[in-house]
Length: 269
Ligand code: DGL
Image (tube, rainbow, N blue to C red; front, top):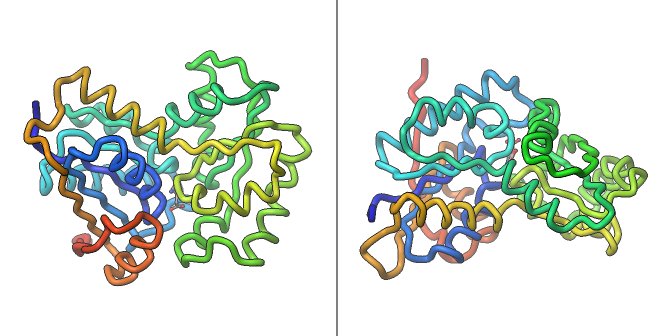
């Protein structure tokens, strides 16, 4: 039993998709969500830089919030840093890449799965490596979708412009004949209506959020880290960017639990 909170982080609003699933599945656990909106987006940055950001965020969650577990709810950060973070910390760390891939593999019928993500995630080859280590026997078609994250961060989830961009970026996936698309960026579930519309109704969209939350629950049970106190958990939200914007857009995207946002400022070097 362990009453410390669980830390979840992302470059911005994307990890709220994972936080939503987490709150629904584990309502009694305490949560600290950190959105690094002051330094978003992570996707176009070199992986070394993202790795350093992920190390700083994890250290901050461990040292200032005394978290018992960290969920790296950002594919780009997980691709860049998960292995290193696991090596550097003795608390459990969970990413979104393995859970997401498992969920997509469970759904596909024709064994052709599309994966979309940021330039950093797709360029890292993390999904191909995960497919090899899971021995899942599916053919992956991986494509970066630069620009999607920026639409979400502006709160523009179903405009004509994002639709036009989706038509262009998703064209190769339509040609590849995939029957499943894994949303390999935690921001993308907020664009699910647009992506689904472009891909067609016969293609199933899979998000890593639910599967990741199930993995957190399994790990809490296995490690005996479940919160003892019972009752509803407390949810704290912290942003390194504009906290008013984070509260306004975040509560629209996550729901009423996001009613207060704390500010975090990175020390300047
Ligand atoms: N949500 C992050 C991910 O899953 C990426 C967002 C960004 O580019 O900052 O990859």
